[in-house]
Length: 152
Image (cartoon, rainbow, N blue to C red; front, side, top):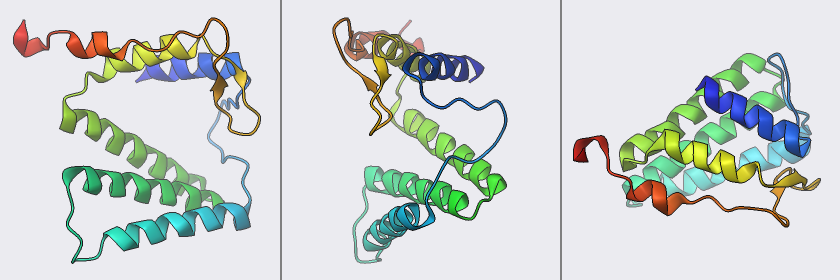
């Protein structure tokens, strides 16, 4: 995972996005971000009713939404320990998606990083890197077409 942290740090540096050298919380607004967390909690509640059928995708998505709500709530509470726990839980759930679907995580992350590095400065409103001239989309299909270890 250290390689991915280095890649994302390089991308943040390139687009002018936040980089921190020690654990801290993101800038936040209790009212605005509290509303977002409450909305996410309502989504979870509406799908977690016993009468609602759940697919594997629905279950995994609800786990991700719950961990995201916890991440936001930790910020509102100014609790860096709870934020760290929520961050680690989010990463674990996302990696679990790769395990559950057989996605080749490392090559996909490397290819998305290669593509991201062709973007320019972050959009001030969204924080996302902007696609301009020279942008190269990730070649995901080639990675998915590679033989798996069991096929070699």
